[in-house]
Image (cartoon, rainbow, N blue to C red; front, side, top):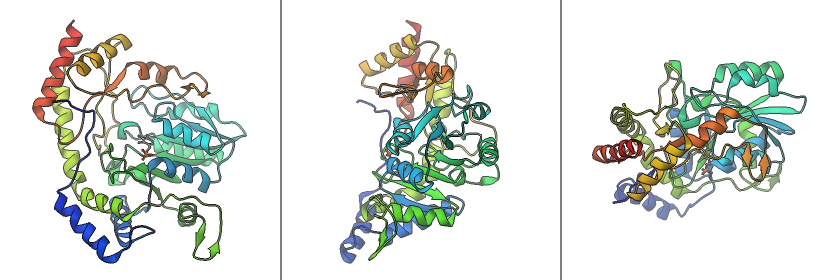
Length: 360
Ligand SMILES: *Cc1c(COP(=O)(O)O)cnc(C)c1O
C-alpha cells in the first residue's frame, strides 16, 4: 500500500448528500448562496469574529488582498513558502523583496525586515510556515512605524491560536487562507480573505464579484467566488477540525518518539501557542541524507514532499537577493506523510525506513 504525504478527509457521504439535497431543492448553486453564507458565519465565529469571505482558492485570495490594499512597488516577503506567495506579488505587478527566515520557526525574520525597507516598500507579506506564527507583534510595530500594510499568508494556519486564544488568522490588515484538499481544513478547492476592517471587507467583496452589485458598477473585479458545493464540504469538515488537530498531535508525538535517536532537526513553535499540527517537517544534516531518505521511502511507495524547495528567491523566472538560512534549509527539509487518518503502525513503518536509510 502506498502512502501519500497527505490525504484529504472525506466526510460520511450521507452528510454531504444532505447538503446536496438542499442545493437541488433551491436550485441555487453559486453567487453567495445560503451554504456559503452559513460557512462564512461559522468561520467567522471560529476565527475570533473576524470577517471571513469564502473564495475560490488561496492564490486568488492573495491576489485580491494585494489589489484591495492597492499595493505598489516593493513588497517585503518570505523566501520560505509555497510558490503562490511570491507569484501573487509578481502577478499583481509588484516586486518581491526577500528577507531571510528565522532558524527556529522558518518564518520571516522580523529583526531583518527594517533593513530591507525602501521608499518604494508598500507592504509586508509573510507566511505562517507550517502553522508556526510569524512574530506578529514585531511586524505590526514595524508596519505602524513605516506606514506599511501587512498581509499574512495563513494557508497553513487554520486552527492556530495565540496567547489568550485569539485566532492567528485574525492578525494583519488581511490574512488569506487556503482550503485546498491538501490542507488541514478543506473545501476541495477554496480559500478565504479574513479581515477586521469593514471598509477593506467591502472592497474585497467587490473585487471578488466582478466589481459590481446588480446594475451598479463600482470597480474592477475578478471572479473569486466559491460555490455551494464547496461550502457544503466545508460545513461537513469544519466541526471536525478539533478532532483532526488532536489526531495529528498524537501522530506528531509518535513520529518524535520513533525518530528520537536520529540526527534530525525540527522547526520549533513559539511557546504558548495553540498549534494545529499542519505538517510534519524534518530537517536532515545534509541534502545528501535528505535525498537518501526520500529515495528509500519512495522505493517503498511512501511519498514525501520538499516543502519548501526551492527557496523562492531562487525561482528560475525571478531571482532575488541571497537568503542563506532559507536556501540552506530548503535543501535539507522534507515533509513526512501526515494526515489524521494515518495509522500509528504506518508512522512506525515510515520511521523504521528512515532509521535504516540513515544507518546505511
Ligand atoms: C496551498 C498554499 C497556497 C495556495 O493555496 P491554493 O488554495 O492552493 O491556491 C498559498 N500559500 C501557501 C503557503 C500554501 O501552502
